[in-house]
Image (cartoon, rainbow, N blue to C red; front, side):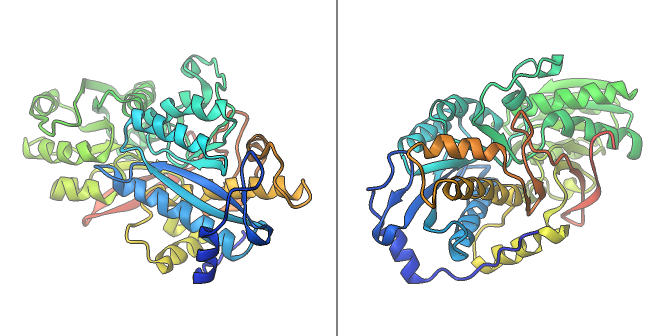
Length: 408
């Protein structure tokens, strides 16, 4: 494990980074005085709105990676800079941001977005520009394996797309195995928000739960914007289900859990990484107790490899927590940094004119010990790290109850 210690950025370095002028290579890397080159790592995430708790953690963690690379002069002659854009969890905004990032020739890699539906609108833009995109949070299998992945026809549509998070093809079944085999839940009511992430996650959960012998007491959809879920709550209460599985995110999941308990149906709500945030507990209140969530990887705070990251993030003084995807965002940014280093080292210490294409090629082959474990990508651009964790709300906090891999 390579430990990257955080040192305060000096005013002189900060000023130097701001005065670099664009007179370098035509495909990334502005060159300033002294031959130093600026490489921009774009970040796209919801920085405002209901999901900003997750998005700000993504932005800050990528920023920390760039600062640490600069402080230790990890790539000689290169200064890394973050350009963070707000997609507000909207596909249209994400596409506009992708266009803006590709237009900036200094951008040689992008970290994000949070939402799979937003990524769908960005992938072609980045791929056409040969710009590497690494999401720390997208879990929809189709993003890497194509629309017919569930039928066994796996096709990588966009070679510019990678992710450090594992997919719903693993996360949904992992939750089903835990609930059926360990928690003793045999009858589920399945709800989703009809979005790419939520519907896909609910589908993979259902497939495994019924395969194990579990019964589906009912199914339904909600509009996450309404926050009044009385109609579906009535169905849940009369269904006889002993658990609710929700495919969606915490802004709706919290109120849904609260309303289910208030109806008298004292059964847990279970979801994926989209509900694994303290905001879910705040929104659900006391009703959150006993609810479950799965999330990608092992708890960052428990990993020896993440000890420095947690300490350095705190020391850096970011106002917002790194949240569920901080470690994955940090590792995503470092994957770009490692790729840039490989390209620079192979070109006599300078960025080549086709830097974007070369960096993209290098990302496919990166392999290093990161915050979240071994960071590398398979032939589809998926993370080779397939670990997941089940969390349970206890005493107003998410607490891990089991980590492992699907089927193992």
